[in-house]
Image (cartoon, rainbow, N blue to C red; front, side):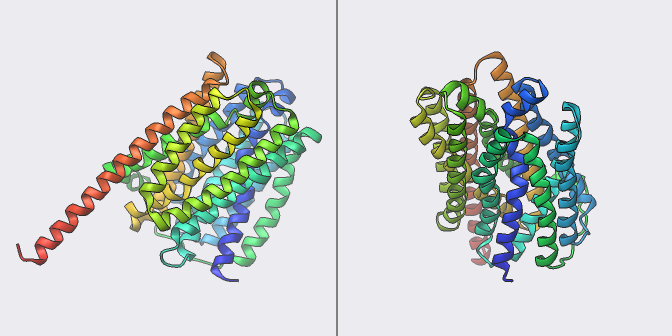
Length: 398
């Protein structure tokens, strides 16, 4: 099997991992009704997942640094299977929280390891596209996994979705074992050294792009199902169709984001995508009563939001090419902190204001991300020109 096919296989497994993470937003109301808690309380399952992911991933990656990458992928997927089956078998909201923590830790390790493996297997100059292919797997979970999960939850039970994901996770373990070659681990990097990278202003600023961008996305997306049901007035079938369209657009956006990064560069791709992202969120609040308008805006939202994913990850890798694993780990942790913050803020907004207000709050955060990206990229260009000038002077003997 070629390296390109192996990368696509990792993307298929990423589909499963992404479905388990994102499915909560698609069945929020179903879980709330079944276990008799509020929608905003169930929304905090996303917060718990994200915090466990953010704090646990760097620690686990440091502890498993020397481990063969194939073994680490398999071990993380085994833990992933346990987490999904726990959601099915363990009763009560508190134990559901526990299962989300297990899923978060396994997801974090798998994502960082898979991104590193894919980046290493990619041809020179194609790292951006390789990362985009893995992001495509997560996007596919929005296309198929989330809407299908809602259909299954409506027809049978929300627990059925996690049971099916767990069963497919067993097949994913077999696929990894048969296709991914053994690869050496890396020298363990102390957490202190990992965090030391964040003391560099250009890296800290670049990571803040991830935070503002994902927080804005999460504020609105966490409550997308109740928004469509109660504000827009969509039917159950309409919500499933809207989630399906959202996922299709996410897939296209992530793929074109990787292509645009390789073709036109990080700056144009990031700033233009985030500007469109913020604009769409504002329009959603104005046109929330029109099902047709909301449907079209959801497509634009997904396209613009997910186009930034591979671009931002590639940008971070260029800032510290000698510490790819650390940068990917820091970025995924920052992403999950942002998801937690967005879900938490969104829950407060829903309780204190209204569902329509979440899109405004999200837009403000994405605008901050776009402004930070423009400033960060401008600073990077300035430093590059200064370095080139200094090299020219040295070569001229000045």
